[in-house]
Amino acid sequence: MSSIYKEEADSLIYHKDSYLVVIGGAEDKTTDKTILHNLVKLVQKKEPKFVIVTTATEHPDEAGDQYVKVFHSLDVENVNVLKIASRDDAWREEASDELLKADCIFFTGGDQLRISSILGGTPIHDALQKCLGSGKVIAGTSAGASMMSEIMVVEGEDKEAPSRCTIKMAPGMGLLQGAIIDQHFNQRGRIGRLLSAIAQNPQSLGLGIDENTALIVDHKNEFKVIGDGVITVIDGRHIDYCNTSEQYPDEPLAITNVTMHVLPSGYGYNLSKKTPIIETGQKKL
Amino acid sequence: MSSIYKEEADSLIYHKDSYLVVIGGAEDKTTDKTILHNLVKLVQKKEPKFVIVTTATEHPDEAGDQYVKVFHSLDVENVNVLKIASRDDAWREEASDELLKADCIFFTGGDQLRISSILGGTPIHDALQKCLGSGKVIAGTSAGASMMSEIMVVEGEDKEAPSRCTIKMAPGMGLLQGAIIDQHFNQRGRIGRLLSAIAQNPQSLGLGIDENTALIVDHKNEFKVIGDGVITVIDGRHIDYCNTSEQYPDEPLAITNVTMHVLPSGYGYNLSKKTPIIETGQKKL
Image (tube, rainbow over all chains, first blue to last red; front, side):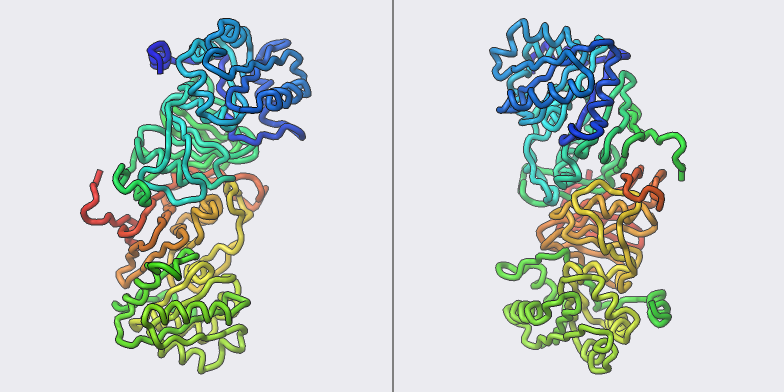
C-alpha cells in the first residue's frame, strides 16, 4: 500500500452524512429491492449523482448496465458507469474527479483482487477515503464488499472444516477498519474460512454477511443490519487457545472460546466497543 | 418416550470400558479407515462380536453388507447384521438378546426418525442403555450419530441463515445427555441450523461433527476427537439475548454472545465441566 493510503487510513474518519454499505452479494434487484432502496434513501440529496465502479468484473458492460437500470427504477436519474480496468485508468485525473463529484459510489461484484490490485495506492484509493470524509455514501456487493476491509479473504475452502493455514488473505482498501469481511456467508458455508482468518489475528473482527443482506456503517463506527439474512460477528479477543501455524497448513484448526453474535435486520453493532446493539422492543433475556 | 426410558436416562452411567463413538458421516471405509480402526481398538476383547443395526436405512442389505466387509477387513470376524425394520421386530426378545451379547453395536446412516420411532421405548432402547452400563461400545454414523443425543435435529435448512423457529427437532435415544448432535457439519454448512437449535434451549450443548470425524465419549463424560475434520462446540450458556419465537418462524434469528470451540483430532472436551481439553504438546496461548 502506498504511503498516501497509510497516512489516510490511520486517520480515516467518516463525515456524519457518510455511510459505508457492505452487501453480502445477490441483493434483490427485481422485487422490493430492500437493500438498494435503503441505499438510495441514505443519500440525502435531491437529484443525487451515482457512479457504478465495475473494476471487480471482467464483464463491466453487463454489470454496469444492470445497476444503471436498477437505480433508474429507484428514481435515481443520474447514474454513470466508471470503467476502471487498469492501473493506467486509475491514475487518470478524470476518474478521481468523477468519484469526488458523486454522491454515491457503488462497487459491483467480481474478484476482490482486481479491485485492490488495480485501485490500491492510486488517486482513486485516495479519493474513496476523501469521499467518506465528506458526506458521500460508498456501497459494494460481494467482491465490492470484501475489498472494503483492511484485510480481505481472497481464497479459502467453502463448506470445509477450518484449517491451520490454507486461507489466502490480502490487504483490502481499508474503508472499514479492524474487520475482515466475508460474503455469501451462510449460503456458501463460510464459517470455517472466517474462523481460520480470525485465528491468525484475533484483533480483527470477523463479519460474515449473508446474501441479500447488508450492514450500514455510520460515522459513529456503528453498523445497522438490513435485508433478509444475518450478519455473523466473530469476536476472537477472548480466544484462549489456537494451533494456527504455517506448519502442517492443511491440518484442521483448533481454537477455543470464540465469541459469536448473529444479527438480523434491525439489529446493530458498535465496532469500537465491540458490542451488539439490540433492536428496541425486542425481548431482552 | 416410555417411562422405562425416562428412569434409565436419568441415571445413565457408562461402564469404565464403555464408549460412545459418534461419527459425522462419510467415514473412510477404503484407505486408512482411521475412525473404524480406532473403533475396533476401543473394543478391548479378543475375538469381539460386532452387531450392525440398519434400522435407519431403507436399504438394510446394502448397508449391512458394506459394514460387514469393512469390519472383516479390520480383522473382526464375528459381525452380524441385525435388521430391525419395525416396532414388532424391536420387541422380539432375540433382538435385544443379540445386542446384550455384542461387544460393539454399530448404527448405520439413513434417517434418524426411523431409529427413534422404531426403537424408542422398546426393549432395544433399554438394552442399548444397559450396554453402556456394562462395558460395551456403541457407535453410529450420520443418522446413527444424531439419534444418540437426547434431542436430535430432524430437519433444518443447510446453508441458510439461522431462523427463529423453522428447525424441527425430536427426542433422540438419549445415549449422550445434555447435547444436540449435528453431522456432516461444515460440509453441509450447518452452523445456522445448530445455532437455531441451541437458541431454543441454551442448556443443551451443540456438537457439530464433520464428515470422517468422530468423538469418542468415555465414562468420565469426556470426549476425544479423531478423524480428518473438526468438532464445533456451541455453548449457549452465556447467550444474553435471543429473539427465538414461534411468531414469525421464518424470520432470521438474533442471538448474542455464543461461545464456540473448534476441536480437531487429538483434542477433547469435558462435557460435565463444559471445558475444552487441549492436546499435550500444543502451544497454549
